Length: 83
Image 1 (cartoon, rainbow, N blue to C red):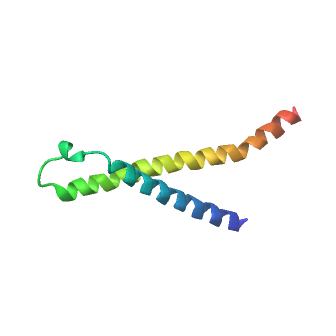
Image 2: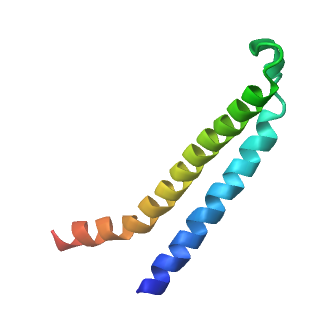
Image 3: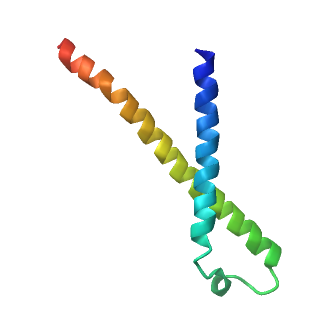
């Protein structure tokens, strides 16, 4: 039982890292320089990192929730069949 939680935690962590990396790669196509003030390089990088984490984590949470819901669908069939 506890093993399952360990595997789920590992899968969730890997999912978050994967989607954060994909988001970082995708955001590199945008030109952020137009929206930023000059001489604010550190703040711009910090914003870029935080934006990457926020978007990547949101997409990962969606993916993990969707996976959980798809695993719970057989319980709906059992419920309907018991009626």
